[in-house]
Image (cartoon, rainbow, N blue to C red):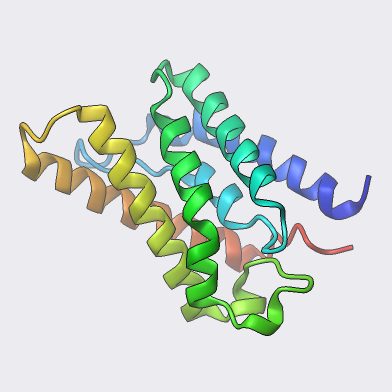
Length: 170
């Protein structure tokens, strides 16, 4: 097993543990909860087979759902962003990076990587919180939850990227 694969496995486990043990207990102002586990999907290699991305996204969402008792909502949101990930990479990544490509500050630059992570995070949170509420009964509270959680998640993604936790190093 290569160092990159070992790094991805450790990142997967670390993000699940952090999400369950720490981040699920944070509810700023009753609305904002950071959902850092999607960082794993954001950091998958650009050349990874789409079927593997969808399988890993589904497994990640399933792990979070099992611990949070959320009946597949995280799995749904993770699979959707796993599916749209390639379209977003096409928008934000130069074509010549696809040979050995891992989305990061180093490969995309800070601005492009944060735009890519922001779009993925917004899509994930809209799907997750809409499915969780199962209605638009209180749309203002839903919007507050989405915006607050997106801001916290992006700040944590920025922090993780600044640490230079690069799973692609060999």
